[in-house]
Length: 233
Image (cartoon, rainbow, N blue to C red; front, side, top):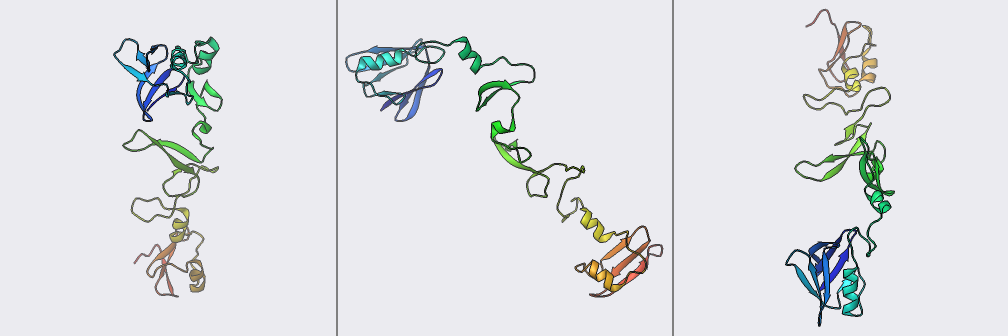
């Protein structure tokens, strides 16, 4: 079963809904014969014998002559035989300046720099990256939050968020750092105060004040041992 589907520059011959051949517009002949229309590509041995049931862009023809006329009408430059105007060409291939690209968007083909919206992106939400080992692109989250498998960006203070370190080589967060180094500690902290400040810290873990040269080692579930840092055990 033959079908003809066209675009701005080509005639596509489909056999059983699969493109069999693409012929540039203006390089085809359509000849009415006894029972078919012979479609041929100029300068080649390619030809197709099309029955009257062949549709052209979804429209059937009543006669072989009508089918032949439809196919013959397609000229170079697109359209149905009128050729291409200067405005038509400029709209589809605008003059590009330095740093400008041909961008297909809701506005049509325009010459400008690409925008996130051209790829369906919103500001600071996702970025497009080339997939490893593939010619395709995939979207990766772009966020100020500590989110798995995302690209981090700096917040208003010039910092970016990460989760607490869990392996050698991981960055340590401020919360983790303050969990072991707390310069607000003095040499007179009580067990009750330290237990309230560090309720989940493991036995034999320590917290320290660099400023006040004191560290506290958790010896049991409720007891801490103060150790002056200039007298290390």
